[in-house]
Length: 445
Image 1 (tube, rainbow, N blue to C red):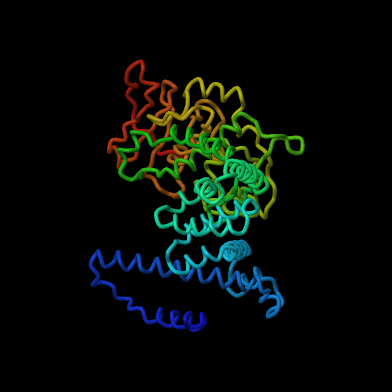
Image 2 (cartoon, rainbow, N blue to C red):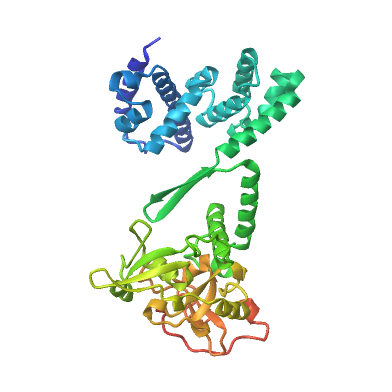
């Protein structure tokens, strides 16, 4: 056997000699190469975790560098605190179960399978004696030959029935109760700012998570792309993940419209946005800041200025506060009732989004002098609001919205969709026949 340090040094050197020219590979060879690389990467990953876990167990970082292992990982690997803590957590987990670590090192199980087995074994900890725990670990490694990570994660009852048949039912009950209590203690929700997005992750107990996913899926089903958009060559089909994201936004919007949020400081929660009025009038970038100085795109700012639950602090000159609030910008309950009565939901043709998840869009922007009046407002869901006010500033070949002479909202398609740009109406407004003829409107502000 060769010492681990020598093996790693040799692998490191061999990687430097990989030929970058792979143009001569046929499809089958490429697949074999991809699978071999994946298998080697898994084995190296397992070795890395085992070495980190062993170093932590022997307090090597404290003895050699005077710092905890997570801090040493962050410094040496240039990792964030979250990354180093996660890596150490996974390393400790696989070190606790040497049979799993050995199988991962040998390439017999994938990283995902190993993580699933560790989760099952940790859940059984304290319920099995040492002999039963070792048998459970061996059984899981054997099951990994035919079960993927998701199915392995659900194998605890099968393992219990095999290694502790006499008390399997009682142990299963204890395990489920312990899992439920652990899930409740481990509930979390974390947010991370990442450029123009906010990423989040967390953990919910199983029942509450299923309820949330069911609610999300119900919203997502109602937000499927309309048949009209399907004919637009530049509008891609949203993925299931994108529909779920839109569904979450719709849920938040419905919560805001219903004013269900608890009071905070004597008032409903509000978001403060600092607006540079001159930049806003020019449609310039960097006109608005939100949260901790986070910059907003022109498209985001236009949508926020329509009907969002925010308080604009309008700045002139050298950050001089010109106005705070401008309550007339927001749609009053009475005006929203009139909008719902007129539009019946999202006004974009074919969209079935309900009024509760729609935003009141100012056709002529509020900040450009557009009134908060029925003649200048239309209900749009979050998805179609972004479609008529795209993030790509300056794009003119886009969907537009107007109010026709008879007071009904109409969508004007981009030229790429229909060269004459003839206005289209939602089906709910076509019960009395086709809309009256109307000339081409000017581009929306």
